[in-house]
Amino acid sequence: MNKAESESLELDLTERSWVCAREPGEADLVILNTCSVRKTAEDRIWGRLGGYKPKKQEKPFKLVLMGCMSERLKEEILNEAPHINILVGNFQKHRLLDFIEDSRAEIPSHGRKAQEAATRPGRSTPCVSLTAHGEYRFSDLHYNTGGPRAFVPIMHGCNNYCSYCIVPYVRGPEVSRNPKKIMAEISRLDKAYVREITLLGQNVNSYNYSCNGTEALTFPALLKLIVNNLKRIEWVRFITSHPKDFSEELIRVISEHKAICRHIHLPVQHGSDRILKLMRRGYTRGQYLNLIERIKNCIGGVSITTDILIGFPGENREDFRLTLKLMEEVGFDDAFTYRYNPRKGTRAYQLEDSVTDSEKRERLIRVIELQRRISKKKKMNKIGSRCRVLVEGFSKKSREEMLARTEYDEMVVFPGKKEKIGHYIRVELTSLKGNTFAGKEVK
Image 1 (cartoon, helix red, strand yellow):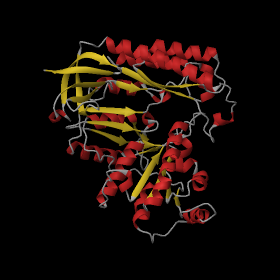
Image 2 (cartoon, helix red, strand yellow):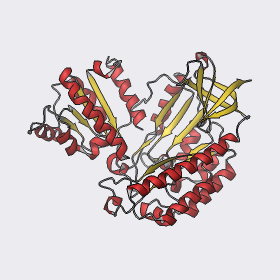
Image 3 (cartoon, rainbow, N blue to C red):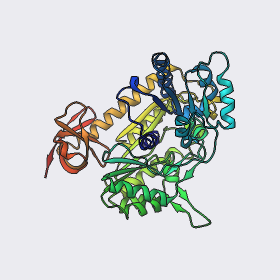
Image 4 (cartoon, rainbow, N blue to C red):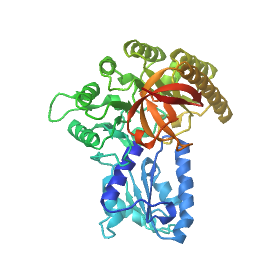
């Protein structure tokens, strides 16, 4: 979502005649778009902010902090980062450009308070705070890269309030985007020769749009509407799904439409019913495994990836063992794994963080090692097979190799030319380098 919102902002800046700086030292405007889901993301931003402080002594520029961190840590940022010019939350991003370009723009009431705070001892720069909550506004277009893939936000916010998660507090409740606006954006992407789109939402499969008492359009219905109106775009993906909202109708729609990629990211978070209940996930281990079985039985050759959270308060050895066992039972193609860290304002923040840092590290290492073994075995079984890929660009290691992606979200590098970018081709998978396939083009 941050990637899509950043591209939309870059597009707006370009339309107002701003030019992308070749390096930070040349910039008249620096915008940091932030995430608060994990402490490590916030730590990186604090480090970036520290790096920009001396640069402002060398050259004047406007420094903007935008996104979830601005929502979560307003007062702390005003106190600890006196060199920030504008603080922008998730609901006022549409007002940013006017404040950047018009120094005479009237500061709203919440901004006046922030500017008064900015004059207190220790602040070197007046700071406008655009952090009031309001109605979230979707941009008309979220694509500015010129590449073959694009993100299309279809909803915003979350109503789940999982006990460890800060997202509902900084992104607000769920808002489904007008399907006419979604289809208009996809039509523009089609004309721009985009070949693959990814539908985005904090809880994408709870999309539910109704207007003026009309019958609600659900996520499966929206998917059908999209795939039935595609032209040049051939693949559709979506992230992120919640297991409790993954309906039988959605499974059926995926199985019936080849344009929907056979890759599903379905965060399980944990393998213990006791911990899942403490997390407020809304399903049991058995219900998740049953859902996986139904998906695999109905959608041939589907790849399934997940998120796993280790070290939640109260997690004991048996809870951890059940998580490892679930990973083996499902056989995830890949997993994003991370340690629990407290997020102030969430329900879990009130729980005793009973798992030590060393235990969290040790358990996380075991989870990563297990997933690597599972992933490698599944990938090795594909060596020698042939599949269709979308060529995305050059390999990071060589301009003689191209980077492509399968519909199962697997990366492939192969010898090729620039002209292949943006085209679907067939490759034979010849070997595995780390987590990436090596291949060769075939007819």
